[in-house]
Length: 375
Ligand code: PEP
Ligand code: MN
Image (tube, rainbow, N blue to C red; front, side):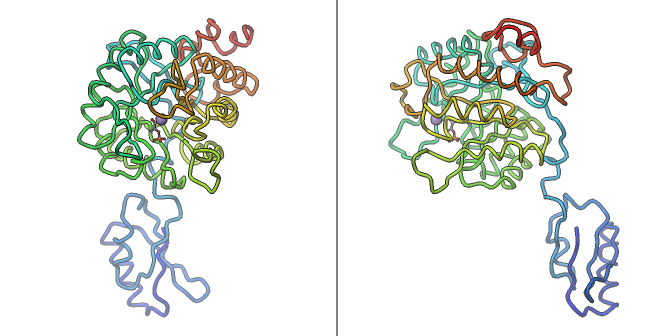
């Protein structure tokens, strides 16, 4: 950090600034440039708030030289184990993140009934998904639209997880519901509307469960990383970032999928990054091409809305794909991973096994290498 001092500060006042910093335990040095004095702080002040410095008499501004999300930016090649523990399948795990095959999380927008979620869960598993997604608590723009089945929906999700062995990702809308949702969810989803809900982020951080953090629809990359920092600061390093489209002037699609966010986020943090082409485009015909592009630019996974009867979906019917289309997306994904040599890179595992991420549904074989021979 650099502190800009008031112009024409006398040397006694400069010394008082240094003394105050010394009292705070901070190693600092005055440098003069273009006739103006600035103070360079040599100690790590990444966790110190700016006001601690700007309140010192004689300081006009505190400038950080590195972003304030020090935890997010210090994480390297993070991979996260996803376990279907809510349903008691704690031995089988899928891995998401650097060095692993991209993870497919798929399912309906909302849990609509026990029959629907059981049917879709079995279908997405057959199509190659590793995690079941569905909302029990739905954040809807209109209060008159279906708000989800709530805790009844969580019970149905648990049953679907028991029957398929798939871990569950489902959304939590408020801090007071984090514990309840975490009893059922293997990954807590924090949606676009809640990315700025700092109390929710903290509470999800405290629980220690993996968190799927979706980018706010008008959030910058830095704001997304600061939101992740709230979860990390509670001691929970299991954060998966999700690019789900942002609002732009384009109106034919629901949002604009900002794929440049994927390599950019990966250059700023080692947290896994997934892409949701369903909410990003809002159009089922766009899901497969954008899923391909997401994998090609390095996404660690896909979040996809899938329904056994897409047109009949209670919510987000226009963007739901059917299980057959999901199988095509998974197949594309494997082809792209192999063609570009992705998924077996710099992570902490030597090789990404097909079993890890349930790609056995596409080609039952042991590794990315042998998978290439079967497609
Ligand atoms: C969802 O994934 O169910 C969802 C509501 O997404 P978003 O928060 O990105 O709109
Ligand atoms: Mn949806």
